[in-house]
Image (cartoon, rainbow, N blue to C red; front, side, top):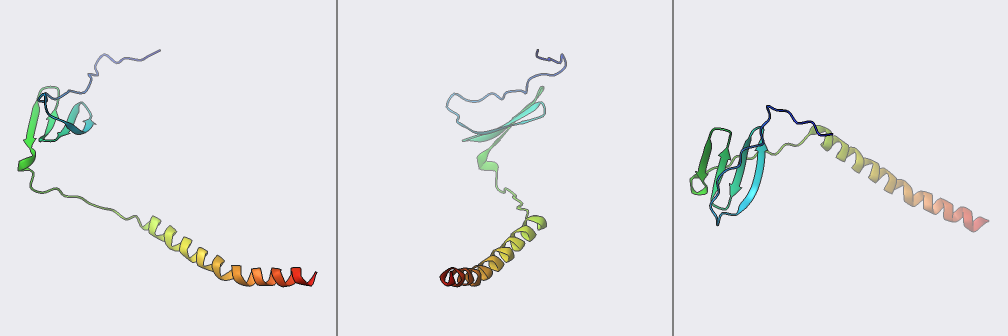
Length: 101
């Protein structure tokens, strides 16, 4: 059984030219943002806005490093170094014990 709410409308679809190629598309609530090879189009229930890519001069990107991931990586490296340091003496000990048998 499919539940259909009477007040929800499908996201709006922007009007694109016949030779425009869609690069990316994102649904934002009831609005749809589409990146084409020529422009960025945002379409809503009662509006449509278009911005040519030639007018986009700056794109701001933010990269985040979580402290937890950095700590987990550092602890993993320390554990790997300890295991590597212990492996050679343990191997030598086991070889000597097996030779004695």
